Amino acid sequence: AVVANEPNVARCKALVENLLRTGSMPKAAVTQMDGRQCGKCWPGFFDAVLLDAPCSGESLTRKEGLEMLEHPPGYVEGLSKLQCQLIRSAFEALKVGGVLVYSTCTLNVQENEHVCSFLEESFPGAVEREEIHLPGTEKMR
Image (tube, rainbow, N blue to C red; front, side):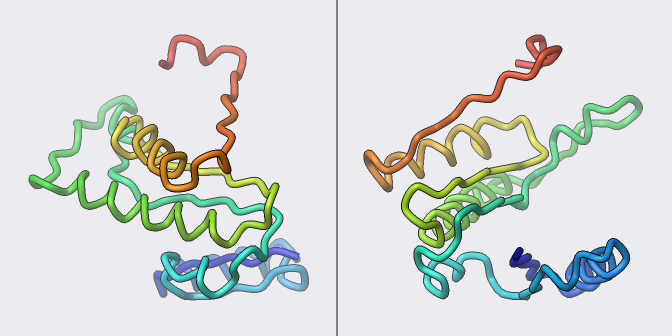
């Protein structure tokens, strides 16, 4: 079974519609809560967690014809703080030995590597980072 959490009302509605359309709803439960609370609500409950974190979306602007986004001062720092809170909660919701996948659509170090380092520092010895090497992506670094 899958538990899908989406705090945004409009996105949650779209999520439910997609689950119904694909026939996945009988095997899925949808919640609408602040992701920072998941670890407290379901400590050590999940075998795997996929955290698709809200981000600045900087990689989306690298597509042809789009300009780099101009964010107000402190915007990325605020997102990074939220991402750290979300990843801590996601990790707390995992069973020992579970798998956590952290995902963003940005290439920003502060929203990716910094957040993963925060998790490793918060839970010394409990986190094992796994690098993924996909053929053809070598030049993307």
